Figure 1 (cartoon, rainbow, N blue to C red):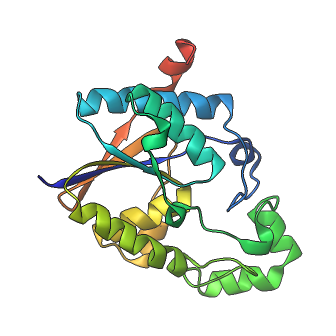
Figure 2 (figure 1 turned 120 degrees about the horizontal axis):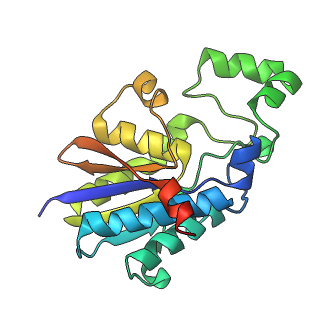
Figure 3 (figure 1 turned 45 degrees about the horizontal axis):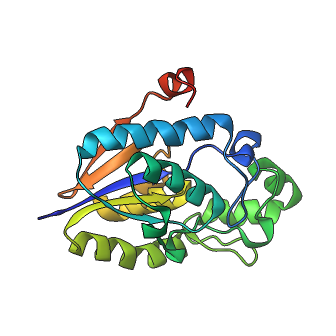
Length: 208
């Protein structure tokens, strides 16, 4: 049996909505974020059609909250979910929680210039580079690819882009260009990717 990975981003958070940078800090899901998680959970249950997946998630609060909702739809106990530190979002170090990229660029133009010159290897003070994120994700991906069965992974915007880039063998530029939706998730199998969109509005209309 081959390995199939369903890769999911957490639902929208309060800070996503206001443009504040989260990194390793946290904010709760908005009503829309809750609806996104429920919509994905319901859709994934239909897609899996009774198959039992293994679930892995970032231990940050927003991914735990999303994973708990999806697990409920899949009839999986939260305690059965593996929480993997390597799936945490990229940290901006001293700038986790900062009020957006524009504010960083205004307050620290020297950092903006460094990021422009080499975005893949740029690190905020006490933060990570995208290369560092890729380095910690590579063994996670290799383990999942080598483990037959169905895997559901709940992580973050930057992490999921890098994860998909690794899986698909994309260049740095192609990886940066990937989207990071919260109203869709991705099926990775056989070296290919399929995007699965969900109807969040229908979920909201149903009262979540």
